[in-house]
Image (cartoon, rainbow over all chains, first blue to last red; front, side, top):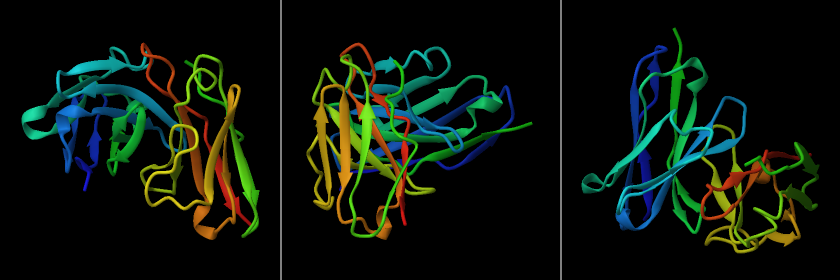
Length: 117
Length: 111
């Protein structure tokens, strides 16, 4: 069974750094793109970026380029989304998803990030 | 890229049908047969309901169907049931140099 398990909820202050994770199991982690999706409170879904764990090829949405870093450690089948300096506007639910032909067939449970002073 | 356009809301009584539209451009919806639809219940992760315009993943009831004409894709839910009440998002491939793009989302209410 394909599973994506994300790290737990985080509460951070503005300016702090953060790295959240998404661990894949039940499939060949290096053979499928992983995407990250943001959902701000009460709002819709937004693609942030995608990574191919096999060779770490990474692509970002223009809105998120330079704002976050996506990475992966194929030795532990885990993808990451990180911020170097959080803002209040980063408060959102973040989902990872396994992609096949640009379709998100499987989703993680989501990680809620709250940034507040 | 701009978000694909969906109506904010749609509704129907149990047993009726509801159709949601998803309008893009020739650079996304109109240019490729890679439109997908996701269902999201409150507080839950999205779930894939339709991919490649009209294909259903295993386990999705055949009450859910998808189609496309020009730059507009559609999701139809037939025989509405209470559990179909949720937010629905379309998504489309937008070319090899772009990430996919989501729709604005539609809240479906079962009256």
